[in-house]
Length: 621
Image: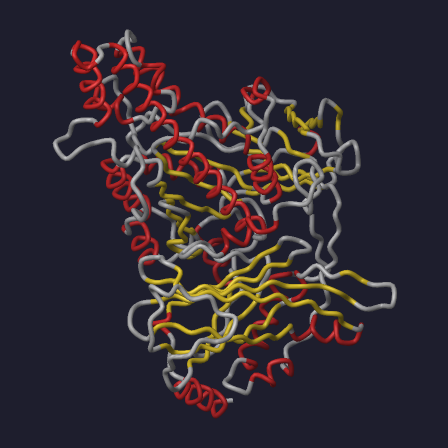
């Protein structure tokens, strides 16, 4: 848990105002001499404070307002706790939305070729995030989902900020938080189909027949053909198909968990509650959240899911899964649409109705599990996807937040079950059902977290730009092309062909978020890892450069960097011919925090344009 002795958004806005003048075109040596407004450091305390968001609905599924602290009884592993804070949140009126937009921190014009990973968010209200999941959704349902979501955006209250992600071969940020309808519609209309199609995406052939049905027919033919070995050959083919299906399902589970983990990491640093609205054809079955009753029988929470749950909990993220398949009817075609992770269990003598019921349960159970464990709600068996999304936004905008210190008063590494009750009957509660009392700096069993996984996710092409480490970036292109590469670069010899253009990347890092060790002699010690990747339009890495920096700072130098930022500079080459993207990421090994910025090279202007823009800005001032 982090406590700030200054408003982070205000401090960041002040920092950026300094950057606006700092990154006016100047020699790199001047970077550390910004006149940026001074800001006090953030005080970071590892206090085991639990934040619990509670949605209260009446018998008509309408939010209940004006409840008091005394109306709630909370137990942590059966032990009553005393709330330390209590706050009610209600959906904003149109006038309040307009006022909220006006109060949002504004990113100043930082200048030509200057970028930041800072994400301004509206103060005092829940954030809504829409995920369009093509990884787990059949192709014919994907078009329907886009149409329904476009209809939803038409009725989105003006001023409502929304972020849109797509899940294909990995997670893509299609549109950051905005209330601009045109930008949101463009993001929803985009297709996320990169990577190898999954079995769900391939579930319907061009002539409309299911691939699974074709496989079953072939299996029957083998079984009837005595010359092929009869039942033995059929059994071998069945096992092959089963293994292939299980492999594909396992891969989808792994990719989906990685995407949720990445989203949770991206959202955890943003203030307030987040409503994660996930449109998917089927959630992988093995995502058993600890807060669900089914997890009690499994009792085998993987470290990956455990870490993911911790990030969701600390980030106040409630998941609202929405079944992209809509209204499910007991028909052969519809039943075949649902991915079954245990195909051998439904083959043979099982009736069509039995298969349908099992497949429907397999598709819906994980949605309920994830929703219940995180305090959200699952929506399925409805064709009105627009109403489902609207309901998720409404439910997630009316809630109560209660904080308390767990009975142990420290991190004990155990799973704690939360129970919340009201002194009024007839009301329905949605809330996170528990949490792992793990130290955020450590893994699920006290070991240090695997340090590279966060950075690997942060460096994926088109992925969200994580903001655990905040920094600003200026890209300065060289005037002339070259056939030489910067020492330390690791190019792909097949894809990296001259001529190249070298780009100098000047970064200014807000070290408030870098974990520093205060040595006995008064000095501050820390380190940062930097990675730069050059991506092609196809998502291939054509050039790479990594660096590690260790620094020891006397108190006066550390205070100066807190006020003005830490500057660094490095270069990388990009082929002149073709479409490329530069993605730079920073990693703090001590805290495992990451930050990243991605730049389309085609948007960068020449050095002369930077100088001219800087002169124009200076003249105006």
